[in-house]
Image (cartoon, rainbow, N blue to C red; front, side, top):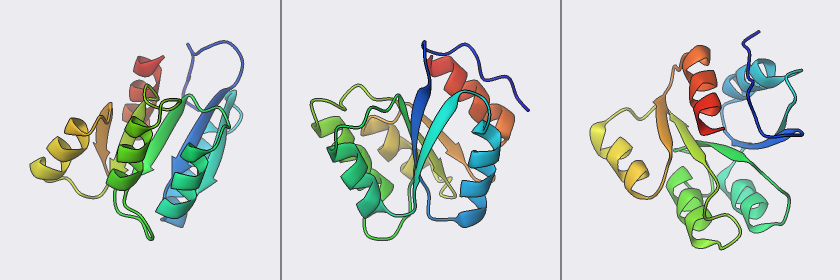
Length: 130
């Protein structure tokens, strides 16, 4: 398992918004037992509810294409909410076109990784944010 330290003191809470079950399993396996806590939702509506709430998160891993609301919709909401505005967001998506990447980054994504993604590259991005 990859070394995911350094990180902030205490457990790091990550919101994962991903509609593909196999990607959710990969992420759960990658972060399980590392001191990172995942809350996993499977559609954009659930992601919007989570970010509008008061549960603390240190990072969001966000799919671009999801049912009910897109990752861009969720990202816009994160950047509009006072209590979430500075929350780091890593986009994980199958959409690798430059226009998609540029759009997400212009809306405030901190990183943009395309599927299939390298677990090591994801760990490196997470570590770089902390």
